[in-house]
Image (cartoon, rainbow, N blue to C red; front, top):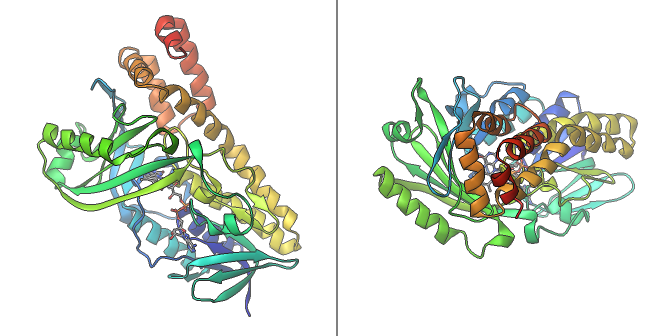
Length: 403
Ligand SMILES: Cc1cc2nc3c(=O)[nH]c(=O)nc-3n(C[C@H](O)[C@H](O)[C@H](O)COP(=O)(O)OP(=O)(O)OC[C@H]3O[C@@H](n4cnc5c(N)ncnc54)[C@H](O)[C@@H]3O)c2cc1C
């Protein structure tokens, strides 16, 4: 039986990136994904510019829109325009984007097997055996668990049992064909006919938000909230969506309607165990405030490769710890502070309204909010800056957030 240096389970952004970067280091890499690509992935398909910049190839062929920042809408309907003069993010359909990333892993030399659902992973002294639904077995020196929120790798190897309580969000994603002119009418920005703003709505769902994201001729709508705070998200989402359709005078054809869970960072105690590591959603890398996970998945894949390279070359699994050190150094603080920001912002509808009202009337707060959403500065610095400004300039409103 062939023994691979690395078997990557899951060919989403985390797995494809880890596989490409590991193959570029001359490692013998196998990617197993249960799906046939292009495959549907429930997702808003929004990524900030620094995600694009992290990749070592161009993604222009899959970009549907360039975005100029968000417009926020408060529970009372107040609009806070956080758009800027230059595009700072992109929108794509996940089936196209993920397919491109997987092809890039293959181009770099990784062997890719689609339609291979992994059911079990077991470890012994010299490596791991990965078993698929069809009963095939593959041997690897190391395994990367990139198989998303329901990770078989994580469960098989005892990383964790699942996502209970407030460790994950539940989310709905609906794609509506409205035509290019309507996308422009609703999300357009004045200075670029093709560029767009993306819209975020606070209030109609507890502990989370709704969105309207512009694609070429499609508007992608969705809602996400902490799974422990809600019995059913769909009725709230549908009520909001019906109001939205009336308000904007649209009657779109729904081309896709999906739902999935999204893991919040902080629940996974370790991302390295024996000869295996977890990346992306399998490791719980989504930002608890923004729900953003694609960028973190890509970064995890990038950080995984050097550690895997060292572990393979020295035949020493302890080098995998370098992966955990590297992602923590880059991402941990923002993910932690993201959780704090979510706690304060999503605490109540009153808090959402107060914070957004402050952003509406205070330019400094509005600019800081934009920096947080755009990822141009660390969450920690921005959270401190916001707290100080609110307590100094708006003490009554500021104190009311904590009551
Ligand atoms: C509704 C919704 C909207 C979102 N919107 C955004 C957004 O706009 N921007 C953003 O940044 N993030 C968004 N996210 C989060 C983002 O989608 C994830 O964080 C991201 O996809 C994580 O990438 P990944 O590679 O870790 O996992 P995934 O993209 O989930 O990929 C996992 C892969 O593993 C495969 N797999 C699973 N099980 C097995 C198995 N047993 N055997 C073999 N293969 C397997 C799957 O087929 C899949 O291809 C959203 C999430 C949801 C639920």
